[in-house]
Length: 535
Image (cartoon, rainbow, N blue to C red; front, side):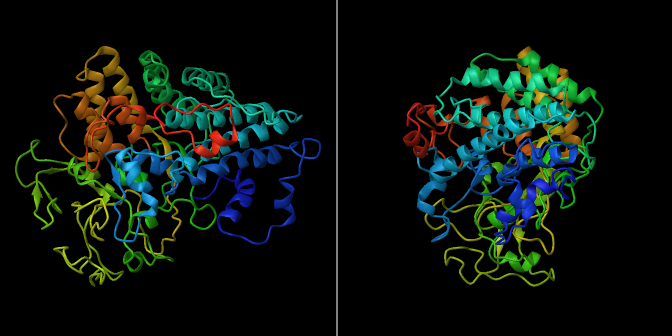
């Protein structure tokens, strides 16, 4: 929520740009002209400068960046074309159906997100490395670790990418093999982790900064995907790295799952690293706009009209309801048929991830009426979110699709919300360890794996523990916990399910869709880049 006091000054210029400011004061203008000779001498100056490297992260959760390319191609999220809305040249449908093009905007934006972050780190490293402050080496390590995390996104999305560490070198960089990029990320994180702070979590002074445990979480995610990234698994390294975080005693599961995602979630005991969004000072979390109906502006008194787009698939929504666990009416939810048939059975409390059912004005009693509702919609004008989606295009019903309700909506919410976004969360660390143990031992019912899954399942889901696991049921459990946290595409690729058929996606003919194409703009500008196969 409130920005870390050590990075507030440095993000000011970036935030002002986001909010379309038209006046910059002299202090803001100086950030582009300072040199190591006249700046970067005191700890405050260093902290302010290094904070600028984090500015790029605020774009993570918008609809035009990493969130979209990680969620929409998976089985979690769909962006139906609702008449004239969300057509957008067909790129949302292409994302869902794995038919990406080299000039699709989300792919271009994601490449730019990664390499803008890398470039910012490289630029700052030039000056910070020359600082005479005794604290400068720690900031150098922080920047190198942050740069490695940007590369972790890039290796995941694009595979073979250039490695650039010299801001002054203007020669067009060449593509490096994915395994070489993997080795670079590992080396940078291992060499710099020990210089990073090990204190200050929850609402402490290092909240939102790359710390020792941030670096360990990044290493853990790297090791968990090693077989995909470089062709050989690293289960032992993954387990050992997870244990560093777990045995630190600094993190714990929240007893109430939704408290991780409420408006004021800065104090979550699960947050290892989070983006500190603020609706006024640090915008970018606009899920409220991406997913809610136009009419929900009145529900939450939003300062702008939402866009009525992002929804979950019926198939994924249904995965939270398991009648086989405990037959009988343990709960009811809005059904999956167009006529609103009820579904009964054990209901996972993490169904709070979605917004379904009748929608009301701010008074809580007046139904919202959509005068533009399709004549074929059986619910008619009364706005009712249903998991059922009648078609992907061109005329999905305006109210169809369970909406992303994971990040708390609140009265007076702005189009940029206050909820902080966890990049690395403790529940994820536990699940990554559980998976690594199961894969190492070739046993999804390993006692450690089963215990971890059931700990999270009972604490966060409020449902009965599982007696056994398979790879499929583990992935389903991971999906219920990690919905809309930008990991689902990566998870599905690792489990070998990304190329199978699922809601609104037919089975792929081959696996080249597991990597996105290098954007055409980059290929045209740099002859040393090599396009990924299949594009």
